[in-house]
Length: 315
Image 1 (cartoon, helix red, strand yellow):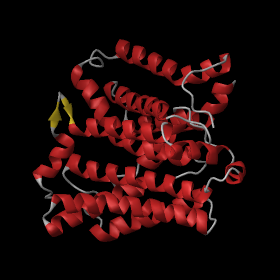
Image 2 (tube, helix red, strand yellow):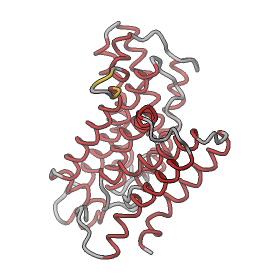
Image 3 (tube, one colour):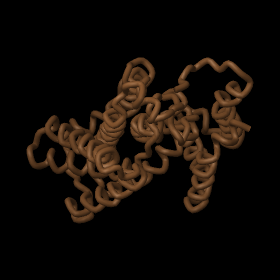
Image 4 (cartoon, one colour):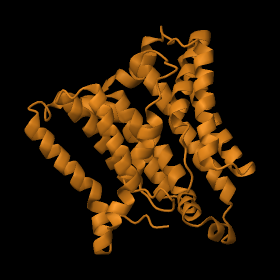
């Protein structure tokens, strides 16, 4: 149930410094290789690339710290955006469209939690099934086409400029702040660490383990809904395949940031570092003109590092 930010041993110093050192090396390398890397416009682009991934990674952190796994987050983003777009076009009301999109995300999270806890289906299997279902429903509702003609005022949620930064970036910052306070400064957060560390011990301590796990999936579902709504706002269209990359990317960002894949250990702040690492890698490959096929290879390597990073840090 460790989540203290101050390391107490050499091993913990190595653990805490693992991702920051990689980030520093990557920044220096990109600064040398590309004269455009340190431009204000490029930094804004990096933040935009990180925004939706950062938002959904906050919810993914809760699930993984609690000892579960949510593979449905990509379908959640896509379906929530589609539901938001359909509701908005049907009612001509932005608020109702946003509420429908967020409600869709929460419902997906709730279903994931109930299947995992009440039916005792492993979270990996339950959310993988929901991934396929969500993708199918999104394609069915749209006939495989994007939903366009969304109101300009809706697009301002993500694209409006506030203090020199797009609104989408500020939503990411707010989500990280809310996630940090909830996970690290509330009783619920403490119970999440306890459940992820040892479910039986948490149960014997009087913690309602299933309720905490369901709440974690709901949080993840909510961030998926937020991501779907904001993604639709950014591109002014709801795309049924718009969330495909986020399932693996979000999980990779959380694990790269130092959250244990086995639960009970992690940090929202370190998830932010994992998101930054992936966004910087994507941006750097684009600046260097690396072909898309080779970019996929690099991303695959990142996934492997994410899966083995805990062992590397411990060594």
